[in-house]
Image 1 (spheres, rainbow, N blue to C red):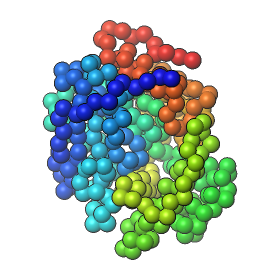
Image 2: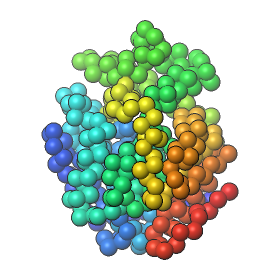
Image 3: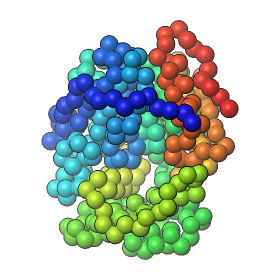
Length: 327
């Protein structure tokens, strides 16, 4: 079993005013004079967690976490129907990252992330390649419409009964309208309707991951808590707009990453984000290393964790370009 680094606490944290009435929570932990690295959480809207600090050697890294707009400890919280979602887009998050980098006095930082966090990291790096030292990503997603359609419609072929429940809860007239329908439901003035939509969406996401090794039993919740309401509202909002990205934009822009060392980690059993996206990205990104484990899915696994830690440990040591542990 591959162990993460021991738990640590931030030595500094705060709320950064990024405009449009938004303030994002940020924190730094580890070595204040260490190599800067930022870990981007998934979702969109999932928020950061203390466990995320533990992927980095705290003696070598200055570890930056932040909660993206509308979630976690950032304000306003998207669970509040008064929170304006017009100012919550991929472009806003990229600008927030630049503001945070400047606020912390960082010239270049390593980007790490998983799932939606991989899309955000890639978009940021393609727009600001001079600010990125290395990239380490797991559970690769580029938020193409084709990927979104797979997650909320195509993968239903494996769970037809659960997908029918998911579709029925959306009241979408056509299967391709499910995600926009949920986005509308999450803006409904009736809290009971928002709650039902959020609980249904959360259940579907858990079902998609339910076949993975070690996956917990799917719990069909009747009530959605504050964080789930924010997560689903943000997620449906982003995916209804395909992240405000042109189809294939992230992969088409990957040549801009040439010269940035990158490691892509993926599980072949990932039904949420099929491995083809990771393979296409690796082929478009000159010099990227792709590691695929046949026995891992979307969630963390011992193999994926070992690869992530090995890549981060390698990049913490200047002048050590050796390859990460493979399998």
